[in-house]
Image (cartoon, rainbow, N blue to C red; front, side, top):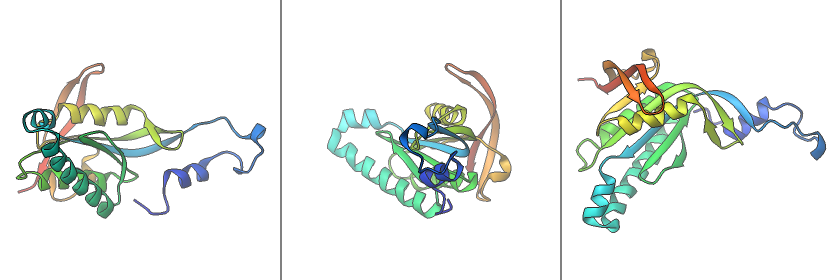
Length: 192
């Protein structure tokens, strides 16, 4: 992600008016339409592990997951938008680093005793109130993460955006509760 692009800078660059208007003259819009890649990842089996081993043991998993997620996001130029308990949402202005982030996590945790699952989608959404995202690609990425198998990436993106070390294993149609069938979903995997 370009260090000069942040939600605040983007909002400032695309707002109507100068930003210095008196209170009664400030434009009413509280959203901005943007193109982004959204990615959700979560630990699989975390609830059962917590129940069986207790919260202190589970926090060790969570610490490792968050540390690696944050570190890889910083190195790949994607932004951790929010933590979701045993999950995370990341966002980027560019799809390839975001896809690479997901692949990196799958690779890192493949032999760690626990696995992650990834869902991602690229598209237009609303940056709402400067710090939240609303729209179809956000929802699709979250739903894909929820139905992905442990160690799996389900993506709705342009294949040309894949890093060279990831490949499409198969293209599938998934049935998403509340949405119905969605085609063109790629199950991604590491290249040999």
